[in-house]
Image 1 (spheres, rainbow, N blue to C red):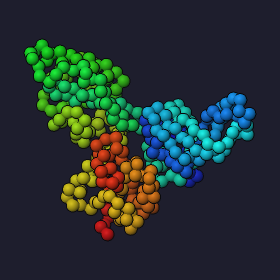
Image 2 (image 1 turned 90 degrees about the vertical axis):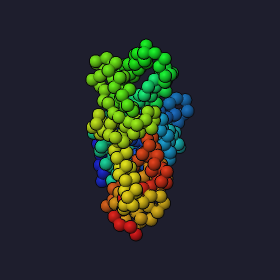
Image 3 (image 1 turned 120 degrees about the vertical axis):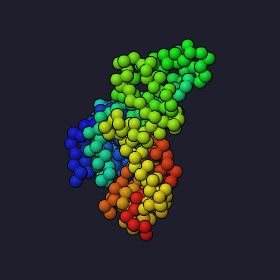
Image 4 (image 1 turned 90 degrees about the horizontal axis):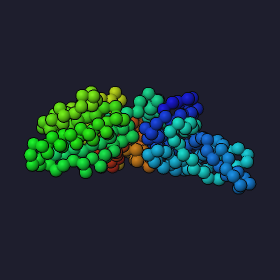
Amino acid sequence: MEIIKSSREDGYARIRLENRDDLWYMKDLVAEGDEVRALTQRTKLDGREKKTCKLRLRVEKTEYQEDRLRVTGEITEAVEDVELGYHTFNLEEEKEFEIWKDFTDEEWKRVMEAQENKAYKVLFCLVEKGEANLYVVEESGIKDLSDVAENIPGKMYPDQKSGKEFYNQVNKVLKRSAKDMDKVILAGPGHEKNKVYNALSEDLKEKIFLQDTSVTGKTGLHEAIKRGALKKVVESSRISEETQEVEEFLDELRDDGMVDYGEQVEKFAELGAVKKLLITAEKRRKNPEISKMVERQGGEVIIVHKDHEAGERIDNFGGLAAFLRYRP
């Protein structure tokens, strides 16, 4: 993401989107009531043809898709010869747009951080005897490579030959899948991952990081992230940072520390008792005032997302969790 021009005081930023991770950041930033201006197509007043022009909308809703963010709202500024009313345009890779909004501290921080973050793709391969599960982890979330399991033989090896065939098959799948990846994390219980590693080609081994986990599958993936595997291969990762914050909260909760969760957190925020707020993106969209209250009183706000296990835990707490200055 490139910030071409910005002013926190004026509540303004001109942004150029560079990759799909930038779109993911924007889905949390662009909200109802904001104003956005971008190049789009709009029917001319004579109704005969469409014209490429800049329109400014007051946002009423957004829809995030993997390759675009659809922004819908009422036109507030347009050239003379196009229809007014409502319009939808797409924010996509390589597109510039302008936004006017009352940025919270947390939102402005995320905009500044987003331009520093480099897009990354990490391939996770969770292995046990006769089974391999592959996932891609990006800033925008976790994706299953669901076709891999179809190419892997059953768990029990009838003979040594079938074991070699399994390793060769994993090698082929990893080599194909790792082409566009920055790093590959090979994880799982026991020594099976080491056997798979030893069977890999030398050029692929250069991308590999080994991580112990107690299980495989999605649970093993989340365990590897908790153990810091992603943090070790990626300098800055939204998922690992959110996981670390949630794990710290859960540790305090288990020890009866100065933390709380659920709807009472809103009352604590009103009293100025919240030092740090963990809030899901969905909860924040429904009730943005909680975050603003915490920031006005000098607290920190961390948005967590439900696309990984740690975010799901906070969602199960009602979307709100807090570290407290004191307990009212």
